[in-house]
Image 1: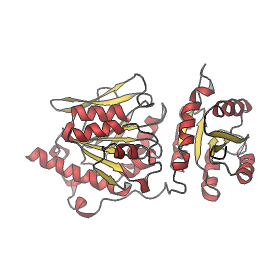
Image 2 (image 1 turned 135 degrees about the vertical axis):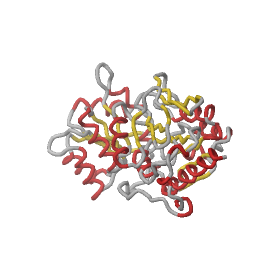
Image 3 (image 1 turned 180 degrees about the vertical axis):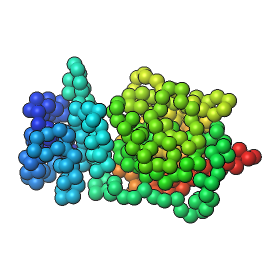
Amino acid sequence: MADDVGVLIVDDSSLVRKALTAALEKQPGIRVVATAPDPYIARDKILELSPDVLILDLQMPRMDGLTFLKKLKKYHPVPTIILSAITESGTETALECLKHGAIEVFQKPTGDRPLASVASEIAAVIRGIRSVRSGIDVNQAAPTLSGPSASQDLAAINNSALDPHRVIVIGSSTGGTEALRQVLTPLSSITPGIVMAQHMPPGFTTAFAGRLNGLSKIEVREAADGDRVLPGLALLAPGERHVKLVRDASGYRVRVTDGPRVCRHKPSVEVLFQSAAAEARSNALGIMLTGMGDDGADGLVAMRQAGAQTIGQDEASCVVYGMPKAAFDRGGVEKQLPLTEIPNAIAAFSRASMKSKAA
């Protein structure tokens, strides 16, 4: 069909190419236009067929997936999904792929799970690929705090000046790894506690949190059950686990739990936002960043109705304007802001957190 999304599969395994082709062609709106066993053949197929989407393995002969992705970005950008049997040592490579423009990363199933078991998740991303902004500069420098919101030197103030009941929750998906980098790296170390849910496979979140920690003034780490939410600390939901806020007399802790997927995801932004609405109410700031689908949209509505401040990333700065749009359309977004302005909004919330404690 003319409206189908054309897919090129690049993988050195003939079994993977065959199984994935069969699984994807059962999905409506998707057509596999060709397959290739390595990047050199893939290059010729791209020039010949102009596919809409590339599904790319990382470990291949003659040229690895990351090197090929970098060349594509420079000479012939194609929206790319990584599908690979990623080991612990390969996680950093997968994160580099996201840094260099990959839309999403999926891990090949292991054990008795068939490859078709991830086909529906991959298909959901493929069908939304026409919403993906091509040519986005994911390597642009992180924004700096500017304007009136940066007039006070927050770093000169001890974190004890912040109200421990003020908290920030952030949800993101497709394009979110780089969006989170741009949001977190400009922040002062004097910032209310942050809890984040980013759709990522298991194993990725530890390495991703470590990368953000090395780039940021605040501490960033993967959340563990019972961790206290503290000023100057950002906790990232582990892959395949939900995270939610629990309030106590001195502030908040996080509960990290297993359980069914919510809004098709685990971790789910919806779970995090609903807990913030119930536990933090008007003491919370909810931020919805780029992502495909509607995970967290109802949760952001609940947060706003509970008195929280809510922000949605604007369409122009999103890689995929899906989750922020759903939240905006349902009335959950108080302010729409470009990505570069969100750190300033967080700085303003930080100053208000000091005032609320003083009051």
